[in-house]
Amino acid sequence: MSQFWNFVSPAFLLDDLCRLITTVPVKVQKRILRVMVVLACLGRSPNDVNSLPLIAEIITPPFTATDVDNFLKTPSTEFDDIIKFGKNRQDDTLKKSIEALLTAGLNSDLSIYEASYKLVVRLLIRLENDIYFGSLIAQKKLIMVFKGGIASRLVLLALFPKFKNEIKKSFGLGGDNDCSFMLDPELPDFDEIHSKLTDFCHKFLYEVAGSMGCGKAAHYARKVKSVNLNGINIPVEPAERHSFHVRDNQIMTMDYIHRKSVYVSRNDTLDFHVFGSRACFVLIRIKQAYKVANKVMGAEILDIAIPRRADVDYVTHFKHFRDGTYITRACLRDGWLVLESSFKKKT
Image (cartoon, rainbow, N blue to C red; front, side):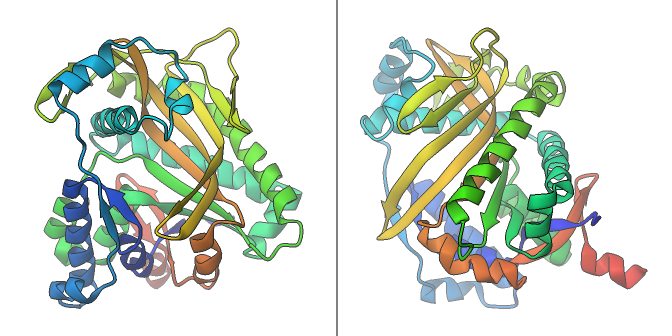
């Protein structure tokens, strides 16, 4: 069984960074700087960014200190954030902004990322040992890839150490562990397999979330005392929350008795269009709960996205993951990636 796993490649990073940017101005600028760093790593001029097909929709948060105060004072149930999704743009933007700050505070170094990485490796090993899913993995009809800002940082540092200062500055710490499990979209029984895979991953994360809550997550959660949003200091403290599952726009609480500090959320209903491209996937998360005034919010620890066949970009790019163009084979050890290619050279 391999000790090396799939991380995104620089080719994927360049493509992904140029597409579908829907965010606030400061994040658009951050994305452009990341593109320039990747270009430099690949031996291209950072000025080439001007000729790339960057897509961006700038959304400026309209909230003020009064807006934030009113938002936090309004009592809410644990699931208001799901119910209101897309209905109250300002509340949704405020919630996401605060949760992004909570995520950054919780993931102040790589400790939480390394712990969640080990959980994903355990999940992968369990899938490989499964008669059904193991066969799909062997045939490259099921591919998992570590992606997101932290995976990008690790890959670039391993491949281009001479640009380490630029990489660390542009791809900072503070992100969660983002993964994607992709099925071959040409599988004839895709929907049935997708459902089984989603349930498999969901069950596993639900089983292991408790151990995360009793370990490093609890230690690091206590360190986050407040977050600062646009100059507004907001006190926070670790809390507890029920795990939940959103299915067919109905919210089902999974923990009827026990609330936990580290919980699991699953959303089967994510389906939207951005710039004419359809995104459609199931998202399963492990999150740390925080009490923020009268609300309970979550800092992200681990995201697992499982795209559906209706997801346009996934269908278009699956072949690049299958042929290895979008993949860097590596393993995480003591905060650094060890490349499979380097390992083979040494042996």
